[in-house]
Length: 218
Ligand code: MG
Image 1 (spheres, rainbow, N blue to C red):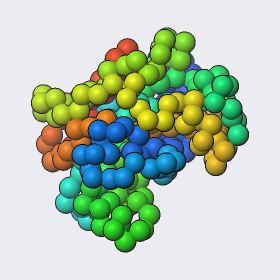
Image 2: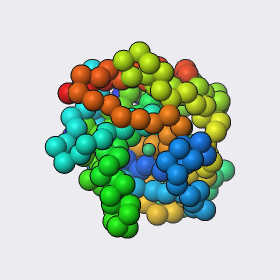
Image 3: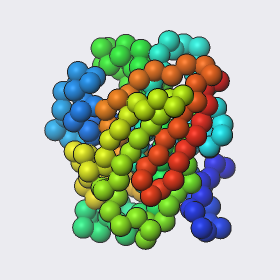
């Protein structure tokens, strides 16, 4: 069983599914030359993709380019389906920092063919994740700086207020497709500045008020 922790609590959450949003920050859509979708772009990672602080990302041998994407992660605390946006925050247990590691060359190849992205997005170690800050401690999850450094160089410098689809709307949309359960995690998309990492790199990510996440690349 793979679990995540809520800061200041002995409570562990067994992770179910990880639901990820793509193309949720305008600047990032532009940097990859994508079209802005009318509805959220959604894909899944399995719980086995998770690693914790201090562990290492292992780039699979079938890829040549692995990109970092720092994202605000939302931990679901209560079961729900068809959740109304107005009731969405009551289903949130906390907020954390996640990396949606992406095999960009593989993803580009799949996108051109109209094929699913999983082998580019859901491989083992593709989802480094921090402990979660309890929801009550985060006054506004859309008022947080979100940043990522590689070997001390600032690569991503965004703000969660820049999201196209906001958390209540995301939970409403996602929960109309997938029943949400305690321990599910939603990744809310990445701001601009994504780029490649290589073996030996050190990644440091921060979201204001939530803490930090440090991982290496094998
Ligand atoms: Mg992403």
